Length: 277
Length: 277
DNA sequence: GTCTAAATGTCGGCC
DNA sequence: GGCCGACGTTTAGAC
Image (cartoon, rainbow over the protein chains, first blue to last red):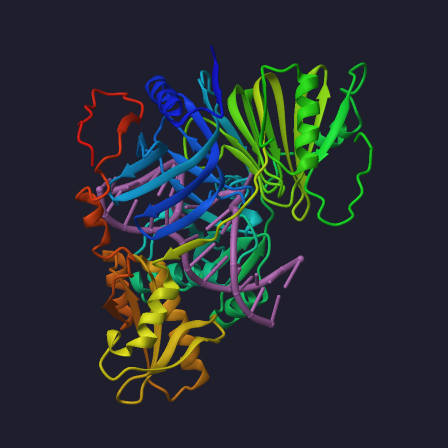
């Protein structure tokens, strides 16, 4: 069987289920009222409340509330989960070392515990990263500037590796820093660091610094200006193209019966529109 | 009732359950075999596989596999979830704008769907932040240097706000940058930016830059040296103190009956030690 | 292991 | 809302 679920189990039964799940390498979800303590790089305490505990076979642990994308508490992969019953209550601890960290979840009430056996995997194909930007620039250096000639990527300097290093048509050294989204002053400082570093390598050289990004903030623009650095606007590749307009035309909405529903808490008087795309 | 669960439901029944859950503002977990598509700031595709979909009433959506702390795909809070059945299969879409992003989860098989009504909340108390560091330094400025006098926190400069700004016993301006953990070159560049900015405000002033952190990397140390900046070692407060040693002695392990179990997949021949603390 | 920088980062604070 | 910087960031890659 692929799923094993206990509804409102006795804490001792929950422990047995966890035991099984750990042995089988299952993905486990526990929902109930609990307190959470964490101690490690920082430390925190969470009073009693309803939360969802997700335990993964790779040693990750996540405590989620009904809000936020980020878990309210967690333990990274490689941690070791341990379940126990103390004073008649289910307790899940997750420890790791380097750094030493402990997560301690004590349940007052267990509403449900489910163990899922995860079989297959498929790799994620992601498009639109900084790597894409670099590829495009190496393909067409004129995106940076007419006559720009890339010489190296990840060129090492005392300030760290430069994204793209090259020369302009006048033979000046050019440092290119790539960012996939709108940038603030930190990117300018990073670029400045590279330009300075290359400048120190060869005191006679004229080193230009070019920031390539979709756009810059006002403060960043001022800093660029102040430091005599340059900016080239370049959007990251969506990877989407004109493909999804065709999807919107309803190419696959032919004989299929379709029902819909929506979900986001309506705190105000929001009305749902009933359109089907 | 607090929990509502369907085991291996028909896709149409799953849709009805989702509908209910969305209306009630429940936390929803769907486990099953699905494909995932994301398009927005980047875009990605995920082939068929067993995954866990977590839908929160605040509009967050998380797709988790059996690995990693980070979801393989997600949507941030404020998104709008929409469920439908198309071609007889459950489909959950989550959209948001600014930026426009879509997450599309299509289920081939739904193993389980659970809706949890989350009632109470409890606030998180966290210790060990950069804020703590600043408080401690304002309490005892000699932690930075004997005779250091803080004049302002978050003092604005063209390079951004300075953590702590003050004067030394010789009347020189002092810029203090705080980091709660070991720092690399970027923190040095940041400090340099502040020092430069203050230097530009008053060309006559002597401006010192002090980085306060637990430690620095070799590269950062070299940069500090090169720029004539200074470093003061200061650990963040754990908030733990000597408290947890007493816990380890087993003060609360008296008459309570305790059973244990552990969970982390044993890929190699790792042995478990049987100690109970 | 340590170090370094990217990320669909997320999140909170301030303007 | 945009901008800015912290974060128990996490993660991947290089050494």
